[in-house]
Each structure stands twice: as C-alpha cells, then as structure tokens.
Image 1 (spheres, rainbow, N blue to C red):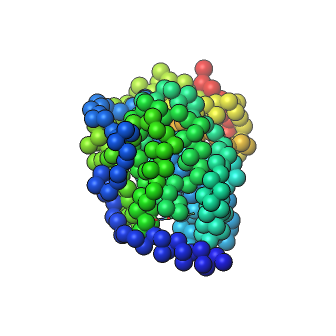
Image 2 (image 1 turned 30 degrees about the vertical axis):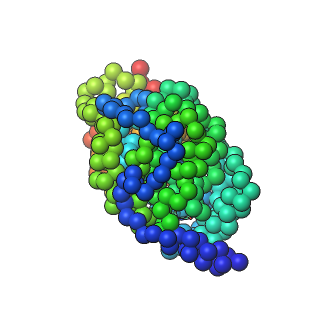
Image 3 (image 1 turned 90 degrees about the vertical axis):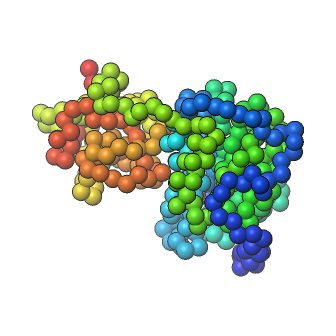
Length: 351
Ligand SMILES: Cc1cc2nc3c(=O)[nH]c(=O)nc-3n(C[C@H](O)[C@H](O)[C@H](O)COP(=O)(O)O)c2cc1C
C-alpha cells in the first residue's frame, strides 16, 4: 500500500520539473483577488511571515531514514525560505504547527496527508497568531502536499483573517510545482490581496536559493534597512546577569517571546555544560516560546536558544546560522568570562 502511494505521488509530481523562480507566469488567479499594484517602502513591524513545514510538524523518531525523509532531520525547506524572508524584512515569524504531528516516515506521512485531503479536514493548530490585526503584509509559505496545500494551512487561513492584507506566497515543492495550491488559498481567503508574484522553489534547490528569495523580497519593495544594533545601545534594554563564583557577565535581552520566557524563569541556578569549542549551554526545565523571536545571526557574545534540543547557548566563538537557533540577546560585559563558565551558574534580572 505504501509503495503504491509513493508511486502515485511520484507520478503526480512528474508533470513539470521547475527550478526556483518567481511564478507570475505559471499561476492564474481569479481577477477579483489579484494583486493590486503595491509599492511599499521598507520592512519591519507590520510584516508577518507565517509558514508550514513538515520538519516542525513531525514526530521525531530515532530511526528516521534521512534519505526518504530528509525534511524532518534537517531544517525544512519552507522553514529555510521563511528564515531568509524574516531576515530580509525584519518581520515577525510564525511557524504553523499542528497539535497532532505527522509521522516522520515518508510513506506514513503521505498516507495521513492524503487521508486528510480526502476528507477535507482542518487539523487542529497549536497556536494562532497573536493579534493578526497588527499586520498589513503576510508572507505565507508552504510545501506542496498532494497537489495542493497541507490541510493545516487551511486551518490557519480560517482562523487568521487575512482580508485586506497584502499576501505574498512562497512554496517549496517536488516536480509537481504549485499545482492547485494557489487556487485553494484564494478560495479560502477570498478577501486577501494575494500577489501574483509568487516565489516557488524545487525541493532540491531550496537550500541554495538564498540570493533569489532575498532579491524577490527586495523587488517587492520590502527590505529591512535598520542597521544591526550597536552593542552600546543594548545597555538601555532589559538586562540579565550571569554569576559564576565572584564574576558576573551581563547580557541585554531582545524583546522576543523566547527572551520573555527566559525572564519568567528567573532567578535560576543551573548547571552549565560545554558544547563544541565555542558554546556553553544549559537546559531550562521548560522550553522557551519561539513563536515571535528573531533568529540568531551574531557571533561570539550572542545568547541564543536552540529549539530542536531545548538548550540555551552562550556563544564565545563563531557559529553557523541555523533556522532552529533563536537569539535571546547580546553580551554587554564580561565576554572574556564566557569560555570559563563551569559548574552552577546563577542567572537573574540585572539591577
Ligand atoms: C505529505 C507530502 C506530500 C507531498 N506532495 C507533493 C506533491 O503533490 N507534489 C510535489 O511537487 N511535491 C510534494 N511533496 C514534496 C514537498 O512539497 C517538498 O519536498 C517540499 O520541499 C517540502 O518542504 P518542507 O521541507 O518545508 O516540508 C510532498 C511532500 C510530503 C511530505
């Protein structure tokens, strides 16, 4: 049965082989919901990037086959695209997550997705966007699942009213392209102003499409011009102190949801561990809420949260960006002490 499903899908996906591109030419959208001409300056606070990816909606099992189910062991393709859009626009990012995750086995996931499609279900979501009204512009990302969108995307659209908002679609897919996905979205959100400039990307090219997707965002008129914060500026933000024996390291936290969660846990005395040659880490008892947090992009001195493992990281060397890594804050003082952390540390809100 599973083999048959895979074969059916492979056949279905073999209509056209498409590489990363914007897809104005390949999509026909009802005239009534076509994009108005939009000229938008800058990026920032009123932009939301909402996306669905298998990688963040799968039960992680130890014996997952990395060849047949690559998406669940590396950052998902759509997740990766969303990260770049977030960086380029400075908007808020929201990962659409179901309460009942999909199997991490490829065939089993196909089977369940097909059943959901057949019975037109709306999978229950873990969260909704906090105050969707604050956003004028939404970048909406998804993979092609069975010639259309994952049904959870329809749950999202029905629970978060995008009427009157400028919506830009981005999609990663196999050889089936966008298939019926755009039509499904238009039908579900008829009052959204869905642009006919759509970024779509063949699955094997997602990882190398950074320049293309950043250009797409720029061409749409969205770019986040704000310079990265000077470290001196961070002194006026909320700060935490990390005490190791008689020494103190101070960090300024950003205003993201993960940093909020960390603050709620303070004061905290906890064991710190070594990881690699550039990280000191600890595992908070509860996970941090990353629903509205920036990704980590700095080097040494960055305080971050690695969501896949649930650990907080004090960096004292360079590191690679990773879509699971969220920034909590930046060092204010005591950077030279980070590499010496060991044993029990005490973290509290700085006076
Ligand atoms: C359940 C399921 C169904 C899929 N159906 C299709 C399809 O009909 N057509 C297609 O081109 N790709 C299909 N794919 C492939 C994904 O669209 C593609 O691998 C995408 O890049 C995955 O993005 P993600 O890693 O963010 O989940 C399917 C993948 C899954 C898991």
